[in-house]
Image 1 (cartoon, helix red, strand yellow):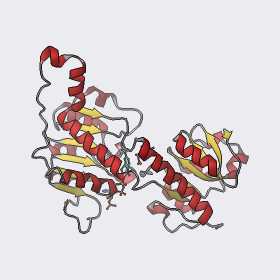
Image 2 (tube, helix red, strand yellow):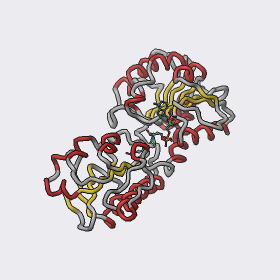
Image 3 (cartoon, rainbow, N blue to C red):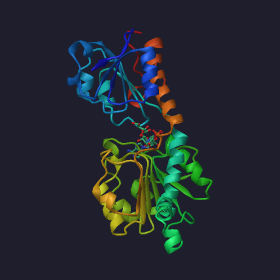
Image 4 (spheres, rainbow, N blue to C red):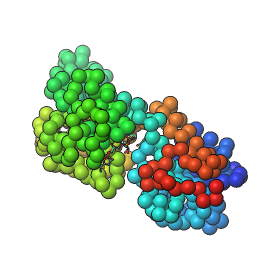
Length: 327
Ligand code: NAP
Ligand code: 8YV
């Protein structure tokens, strides 16, 4: 445990954090760092001092309950499935995330990943680098094409909408599934994920993780996409039955997949590493210097606003209405 600077409010940083964000935290707060999200790493005196958490890792009920003066948890990322926001809300603790500032970056990545998956850019480059172009001839024609495809978006929120707008410009028809139909939206709504998968051949998941979406993308969905089917995931790996996906890729139930997210990151199942019709990325959707700094700034600005003005800038839905008691 390292205490980096003394000032009025104390922020706990469990695990790693972007240096830019850590620097801004240190300018504004007293910071306590622990190696991982484990309350046993804190002395009782330090636990007593903590008023806020800044994290890009798990914040569970055990950590929350170990901090008697905790007021706010600022999550680095728009997806906050690693934070027990319901438990925090039940104790009047604010949770914030980092929406909007990463939307375009992640949507760009989703489209890049889709094109890479369909047109095999990584494999074609590997062919060139291995000298096979000169030695054996042109890279084989790709089975996949974007031409004639129909796109289904699972999770038409901020990022899903940005992906849809990009793909609309590619001349592709767009459908989607959310729990709620989006008003004044030009895309075709499906009330279930399965009916969406039956209607399209290209499914892009931009849905959040958590209990409601746990493994909802499985064998039935892949069979519905069919042998020309493409599955792209930039949402959360927990939404997918990864063994069913590996099987669907291996036996030709679908054509190929592009994955930026996995259920147990940074671990990727052997079965997915084995198939060669999957394009696998190490969760890089928002990972540019520009966008990660903007996320870090919003995370820190939420803490500053909370402690200075008693208001969070971007509370998660579970936290809306929570006010600062001592403000
Ligand atoms: P958002 O605006 O909240 O959009 C989420 C969408 O998913 C909403 O349209 C919501 O509509 C739908 N949804 C939520 N729960 C659902 C359920 N159980 N069944 C069906 N639809 C559901 O969030 P966002 O800013 O677009 O971010 C979306 C997700 O992208 C994040 O939660 C995160 O997991 C992921 N993400 C990944 C990266 C990356 O690096 N790969 C980066 C940023 C974000 P309804 O409420 O109407 O259902
Ligand atoms: C980050 C993300 O990589 O915002 C999200 O939900 O998945 C990504 O932007 C992640 O939050 C960093 O931990």
